Length: 372
Image 1: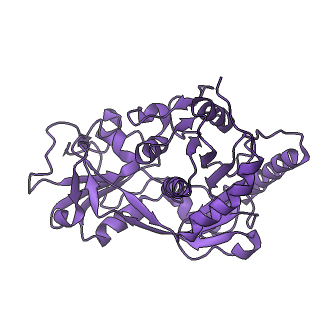
Image 2: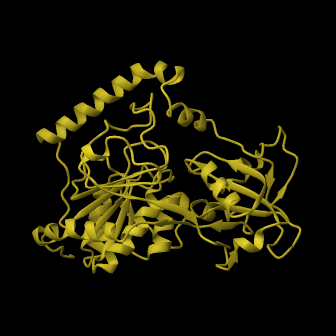
Image 3: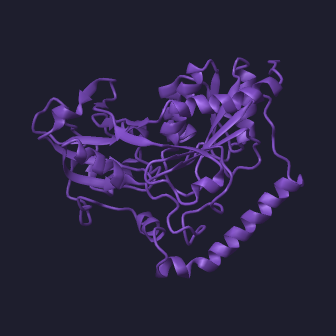
């Protein structure tokens, strides 16, 4: 992939998608947020009605025969749920659990299919979603996606009767799936201006009851009122990047090389800042909408990127194309020379031990799953 003169001015060294303006507005109670307050009140009323219907029993939630842990957030946008899910899966395995992961598979082309889809390491990200694919590749545990998380749960348990705990990646507000443990992840923005969508980032009123809270920035306000056990969450880039062939390349060896960074995540600027903190020289950075179709040649060509004679990492003067691990499998379809930089999280070991302690009573109350 080489950089060609685009038909319109090339993105600047810190391009930002239009959605970034909204997320910026959510951090303060400014004119745009105030203008959106009437819609926010309607959103809040509908959410309150929905919660009331489930609490009253008029709407029924599916109760899986094994314990369910939901890893989600109370704000819109990325908060690092997927790395936390991967960390939690490893922590549960260390405690003797046999987990499976379920997800809606946000952004996949098959979202209208009512059936569950097993996510395999070689699955097409367009069919299963980029985040579930990353989880399947990194964790090695069963991963299923479906429009309804209950459908994904049933399929996972039917195909893998050894599974004794389900980890739901996202879905804190998906009340149709009963859960035993709720984990909320907060990014550095916390709860923003404290207003609900679309005037603020909140998906539901805060504070609300939680079992566990993880926060990447300062502790969110009113955290004690949630009743959650809370731990700080440290996010950092791995010290290496990974190529499509699986080869690892030390980031330290890329210092002094021109770097073109590309990210299609909720807060791409954080990825760019982490790369710069590693001493890398970013000559261009493209911040794209979350889950952008990076495997679409026409879409990438609109950015001035053309898949032709791609330079190799071994060419000392060639620019290095770096992306997030989540974006890699879509981007590699067009740019096989791109390198993916994994995001790693560090959490106090007491976090995994606490979740294990919360799940043990649920395990004894859950009947075994039988395979037909």
